[in-house]
Length: 246
Image 1 (cartoon, rainbow, N blue to C red):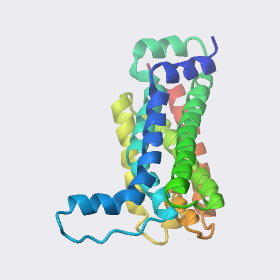
Image 2 (image 1 turned 30 degrees about the vertical axis):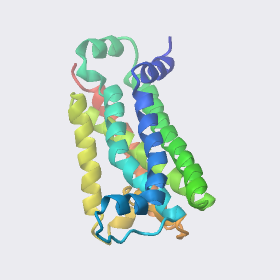
Image 3 (image 1 turned 45 degrees about the vertical axis):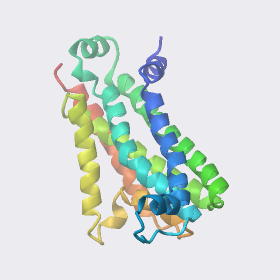
């Protein structure tokens, strides 16, 4: 059995793929539904207190999906990727793999399969959110949804690459995942500096809502940095794992 097939089967049989699909699929329905029915929910639970609620719009429905899905989705992506890329956390498995093939051949399917699973899960969720929003509120901008989804997919691939880098620095799966999430949070904080913000991969997250709302595409610098940093993280992780003592 090839390592590619083994990694795909592991992702399915350990239910990691279903976890990702479940998270993004759940919020794809919940987000637009919340945007549509929030006024009624607030009215019933408000106890007579008047609370201002934004009008349900297609942009709000898609924004609710992204905001809710990424909060938990990024953590899930980091843990799922760490469980695969931090294979040195199990010395027996690490020794078995390292004595039979090269680090490059070990990492290639693990990076590719986890990136594909994360990207596919979000893209499917985005398609579901688009359909639910169109049914409950109105149709969002199709072009903005497609381009915005591609940018979020790139950001998720960047997340997997960063996870692989930390897997080469520490051996623990939880530590790898939590360090990854910590770096993503730190990048968001650094993004408060106006001069740096356009260059950060975290800028791609805001592109989703902006493009669906009809904004211009101004994210070339964030796309370039995400591609370069992802490639650098993958190459550095491979270099470090080749020289790691098991």
